[in-house]
Amino acid sequence: MGWKATVEEAAAVAAEGEYDAEVLTVRDMDGQHGPMVRIEFALSTDEEWDGHRVSGIASKRLSETTRLGRWLTAILGRTPAVGEEITVEDLLHKRCRVVVKHKTSPDGKTFANVVEVLSSNVPF
Image (cartoon, rainbow, N blue to C red; front, side):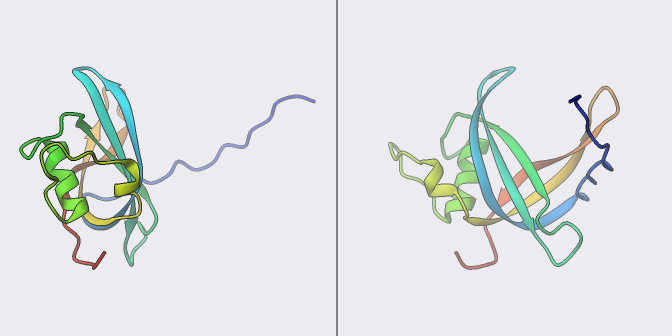
């Protein structure tokens, strides 16, 4: 039996804006400037973007002043203490708000990227 696949319509890119969201996954990755963290979120809206997945990337450096530090503070609802270890389990299914902006790759593809994570308006 031969290989076969059906072409589907490309998934729409979430519109730029601020959305309620929930943390789905957290993964380490190698970046151009060293170790990075990719956090994937599911949008929670009353609109067409409900359940749509978006992600953001931050340097793995974790302190009060780094992007990852600001994001984790927003997700956890508190500033982690110096020396505290944060695990994936601490973040999964936590609610927050994400700011989505579009970025276009050199080959013309547009991606929805999380550029900021804010505290949730919805109780944890």
